[in-house]
Image (cartoon, rainbow, N blue to C red; front, side):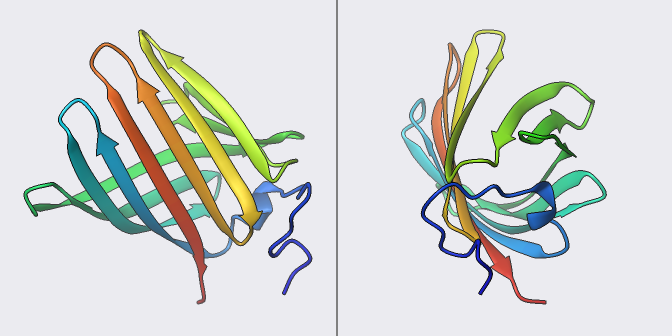
Length: 147
């Protein structure tokens, strides 16, 4: 077990701690505008400066859809700068602390995220999104897969 595993204080993680392995993702999305719950099960990998995830999104009616997304991840002294795949800045993941928050404003929509690394190498992100057309929470859990 690494010294970072199940650490309770400041972690001082680096982007390299996320690379070189696959991560299992389980996600729940609560859409308050439609009073609906969606789930996502998939995997992600951080490689060559990209975060890429693929999986299956299960809609409230049971229909399953393939889902993919990717972001550019760039190491900084403070953590990881996350950019959309078109190069626009999204937010920074602060890796110096076991718990970190970030925000992104997109027109009238407010995206707030809380990251938790206290159970490393299991980590979570909780997004709360509010705006004129959006009102949802997206809770994701990541677990390192053994290759």
